[in-house]
Length: 338
Image (cartoon, rainbow, N blue to C red; front, side):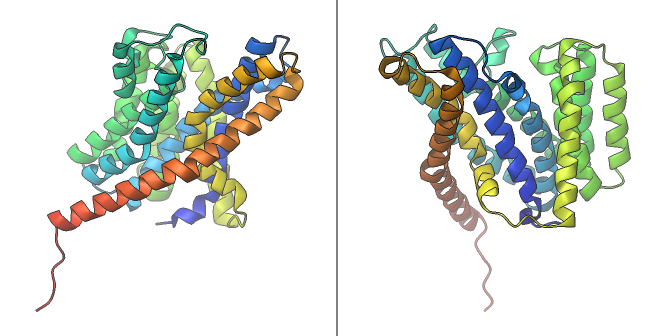
């Protein structure tokens, strides 16, 4: 098993994925406030940073499930600790901010929508329905993937094969539809898992790869399927190259991996940060150039996200980790020799 530090370039890719999503949202929000055309058209591709996130998630789940979180109960506890508290905090903050008079620009959410968002269930309202914190739609896919992985770990001996089969079967049953439970984008988690099995379960790897290829070739070329071909497959190649590079030569830098550690906070916080700074700037600098505003606002959002990571997320994880360890000691006290 490889030490977690081996995969620092995966952490860098996590930051890159978050940063391009931030830049994409900064551009469309800045234009909505200040007008004009897209100053940086390449940033329109930033929306596909999500595809890179999904591939990385698939790989990480096999990595941690094969080395540290080897039981379903531990897996679930740590996944909940990792994603739920920060998401709930940011969702509650977004809900509160949208109810401040004069601040929200769109229709505000009601208590029912808030509850669905907190439970990762806003997708039940149909396509094009987003949670209170709009980027949370990706977390709803993550939670679905975690649930499938956890159930597979608890019920079967070949957890990764079972989880991949379920995800691929759901996609295949949808025939290219964009409906949540059948969206081809879920194949990207299996891409990452396939990469993971190459390292941790080599006998399973060719079957995982064959399953991905067969499902991809079988799907009609819908818009959702095209996204997987155009951005999911290259994302899988990029993750594979990053892992290969880490095996060839360990990454020696600190800044980019540290920003990768903060990528979750950056991803969750950036929507609020961008909206707030644009609201203020529209009052104090109503003629702000979008060409200047987009990079400045993007950097501001990343900085705010990093501060939230240092001040909130890290401390939350530290406290929750201590509580889990204390609970484990109470349940399974150490045996001392007489």
